[in-house]
Length: 195
Image (cartoon, one colour):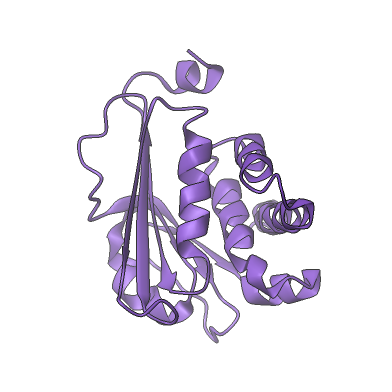
């Protein structure tokens, strides 16, 4: 049994809903998280759901990882949600348990999101991706932000999965790792400043 499982004990479940619109990398980020979770947890589920339209249609994916068997991959309310497109925010505001975490792509949001009892992290991922010169890396920025806000998995587990999955494309590995790090650093900066 690895140290993460030992520290968290029996039956420790983590779940996250990742949602947005097709074409923003929701499913790629969720699948990367699920595969990375298999290095720390014996039971992992990945449940994607998306509209017929490949680009621009509503897209959602639930990832559950646990030290015991996952009772159901369906999660109505989760411990965390990551919203990749602020247009999709409203339907997911009530789907995070009290004490949970909501990470929101906030580039187009004018007002701060405030949900009582939920830790909300506003991340201008589109802007940060543009700064990196990697507009398509928004998904890995938000994945890094999720890891920073929740501590759900060691970032090294996700980095290892990125290296493995994109081993044939060193440029993609480098870009995705930079984006992951950018999201993590952004959240760490928010936590240090108390905001």
